[in-house]
Length: 138
Image 1 (tube, one colour):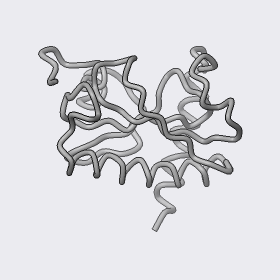
Image 2 (cartoon, one colour; image 1 turned 135 degrees about the vertical axis):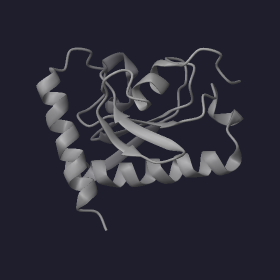
Image 3 (cartoon, rainbow, N blue to C red; image 1 turned 135 degrees about the horizontal axis):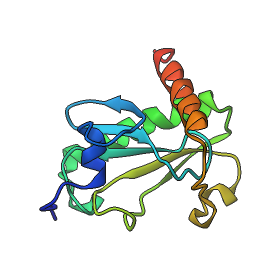
C-alpha cells in the first residue's frame, strides 16, 4: 500500500528532516536510526512509500537486500562485530525498511533494548565511522 502522506522516512531521505544518511541511490537510502539496538544501527529504506516489504516490486526488494548486504558487511568491519543483524519488522513506520546493525549476541535483536537517548555527538561519530568504512570498501 502506498502512503497518501509522506512518511518520516521520506522526509529524511528528501532532506526535509535531518538524518545521518550513509547510502543514497535512485531506489533506496540508508541512514542511522535515532533509536539503535547497537552502535551503527542503520535503516535501509526504499524511496517508494510502500508499507509492507512483501508489497515491494521484486526488483526493488532485491536491490533493498543488496544494499542491506553491503551495509551489513561495512557495519561488521566498522564496529568489529562478529555478525550483522538484519530484521524486517515494519510496525514502527508505515514505510518498508530493513534494520541492519552490528550484532554481538542474540540479545542485540531485542527491540525492547533500543537506546532512545544516544547523544547526537555519538550518532555523528557512528555516521562518520560508517562513511569511512564505506569509502574503504572496494
